[in-house]
Length: 281
Image (cartoon, rainbow, N blue to C red; front, side, top):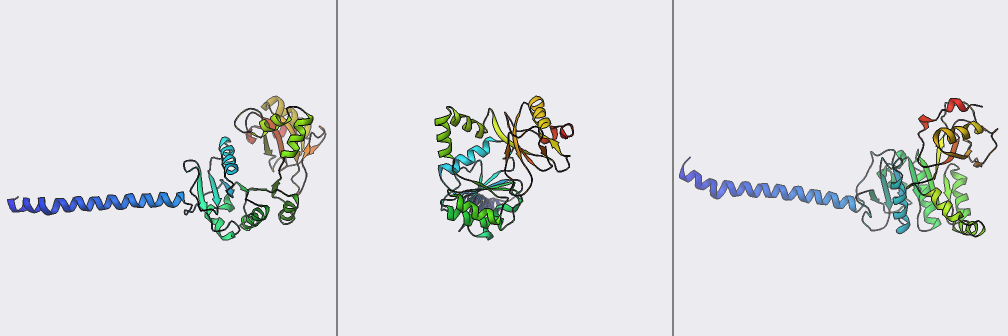
């Protein structure tokens, strides 16, 4: 209220308040930048995620293409994608995926940081077959509940992994097979590319028969898929461990619960919309 009080407020209280506020803003901004930087450099952990996709290994453009194809299928990427790498790098697509850097892809203790046990699917693709095999064993040591896909250049390395984990799906290079098929049957390469692309048009999908379903007749399933869902049923794989796919089987084939169906359609089918009860054998 006095002149002296006003001078104190002008020369001491107001500058002090401004300085204190500036310090608060500076610390908050620094904290946000540090948090963003830690996420970009892969130092953050995502231990509460579930139903997501984990991509293990950095292969440059191949990994970016993998991520792009995963993002095109909007049904399977709703819970997010986490890239795991051991290289000194930043998140290559920070607006679309999460990134975690491990000292070694072969260290099982690092994968709880990406909640690999709760992931819906895991893709392992490292620089060499030896690195891929070591990373796959590290991932599988965490007992993931989702589907695990591992890429190899050599079938013998795949056989080593399958001997310990028969449910893992191995992917081997198909470029020679596609090239020969295209040479013998014109347009085969274009058809294969169309079936594998999820961006639009006819695409190959899979669907698991519910565990509570009765035994189904393949012929009835084929007709139901074609006439009710505009989808073409290609075949199925029995639920037995190590079972091989049966493509273009006879109508009389009996499809047991938990079998995996393969079909071609413009979009992924909702299992709840399939009239399983009408297809019993």
